[in-house]
Amino acid sequence: DAMVIQNPRYQVTQFGKPVTLSCSQTLNHNVMYWYQQKSSQAPKLLFHYYDKDFNNEADTPDNFQSRRPNTSFCFLDIRSPGLGDAAMYLCATSPRGVYGYTFGSGTRLTVV
Amino acid sequence: GDSVTQMEGPVTLSEEAFLTINCTYTATGYPSLFWYVQYPGEGLQLLLKATKADDKGSNKGFEATYRKETTSFHLEKGSVQVSDSAVYFCALSLSNFGNEKLTFGTGTRLTIIP
Image 1 (cartoon, each protein chain N blue to C red):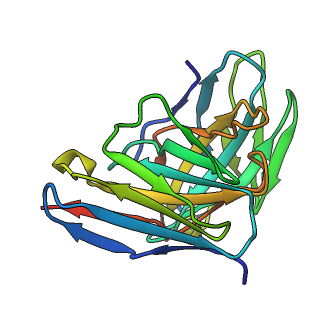
Image 2: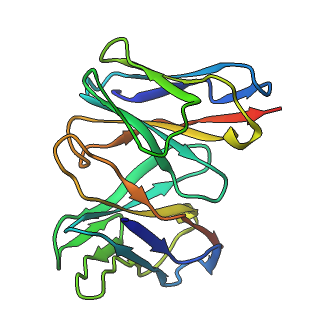
C-alpha cells in the first residue's frame, strides 16, 4: 500500500545532541510537511517542501532544519534539542493543496 | 491570525449515545474545514471535509455542516461505538497555491464505554 513512513517511532536523545527524524513516501506527492505536536496541543506546521522549494513558517525556531534529497524522502534535523522540543513529530504529504493530505504515524521524541 | 477552537475534552460517552464535538473558527478568508481523527499510536486520518458554506461532510456515520453565519463546523454522530474512541481534531485551511497549511484545534479526546 502506498503510504507515509516515519522512522523511528520513538526516539530518545540527549539534551543538546543533534538528532534526525526521517520520513519516506511511496505516494509520489509533490508536497511534504513537518508538523510538531506537543502534548495536549494542536499540531503546528514547522515547514514544508513543494517539490524542492523549502517554505519555513515564520515562528519555526532556527534549531529546526529540514532536507529533502529527493521526492520520496524528507528529514527533520534538530541541531541542539532542548527539553521543550519533546513532542510528536508528524510528517505528511499531499499531491497539491490540502485535499490529499496523508499523515505518517509520527515519531515521538523524548529529550533527556 | 487564523485559528480553530474546539470543545474541551476529554469526552466520555456510553455506547449508542449521541455525540457532538463543537468547533468554531476564525479566518480572514473563506476556509475549507476538516475533521481529522487520531487513533492510539497512529497518525492523523481525514474523517470528513467541507469546502464551502452549507456543505455537509459525512463519513462513517459522522457528519459536520459548514456554517458560515456562526463560523462553526460541529461534528455529530447519532450512535457512537467503542471503536470511535480516539482524538478528534478540527482544522481549517485557506489553501492558496503554494501554501497548503492546515491550522488545527487542540483536539478532543473521546472515550466510548460499553
